[in-house]
Image (cartoon, rainbow, N blue to C red; front, side, top):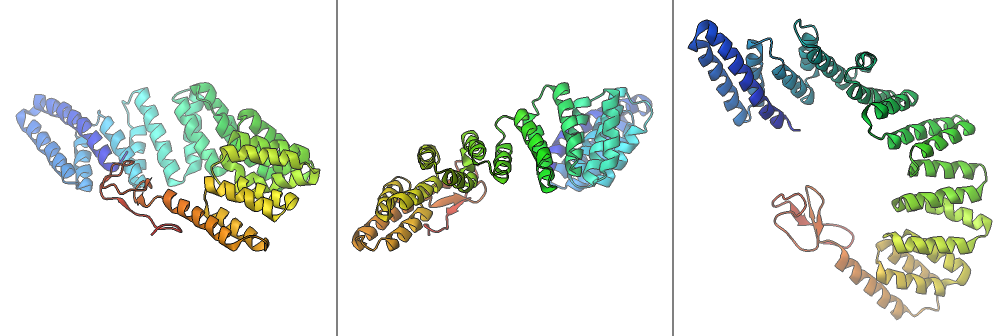
Length: 390
């Protein structure tokens, strides 16, 4: 939420505070006090509407000070101070609320939680940890406090405590935390691997996979551990599983995976895997990998023919460069036919490349729009610049 939105949120709170205090003041001193409060409120509103936020905040602080029993305005202002980076002011405000007599238990707890958030923003993680731990121990606002504790332990890179508190948060809130827990175990696995504790690394990779069976990072780590142990068959299973879980990570696994296939002499499985990936992966990486495999086993001409057919379906600059390299190797190829193929690929690249891009949200289009269909902003779509554009 923006600062301006928070200021507008203060309007009904400040108005309510002013009305209550004005009413009390009216009972004591009559209409003059109500009039002063109304003038103060509308002066703050005028500052707000004229985008003079600092002056508006000061006015709302005055309104908040009129009635010490009303704390909602102080909570809203404290949140706004923190968002603006004025953490010292937020800390002082919330400390005063924590120490104020007469607050309900719920208000006191909210003030402690807000003060802990201030400490986190200020980098005082030990103080924040103490406050949040006390809230969890007392059993009040435990899910919120646990979520903040997880953030504290993340910042401190204390992955063991982060895992423990993530599990507690899951039990308290019902929100699944497996994906996050898996990442923490992967951090511990990497730490163990770097220290030479491969058994510990394997343990945490297994824990990560148990927490999130589709964790790509755990699959990559498992594959690397199997490679280090010269277990190509197990590495293949791990890397292939990564591709099934998230095909976008295919470029990261291709090189080590193809190395495993080659060492095992399993060209048929390599070809089958690459053909499957070509059907589902939109990029050119598996095409180029299979082209190299065909070149090694069947020669330049067969590889050139395969690559040409693929590039007509999915033109790319990288594929075009590979086609040129293969053409230079195959001296028997017809230069005019090669140029014709390159011209066709280049024409498709130009046609498929968006000519315009939104400067705000990145929306791409072949035709110009004065209003972006993505973010609805006006005048933000401009001609794109790149390897195949203007």
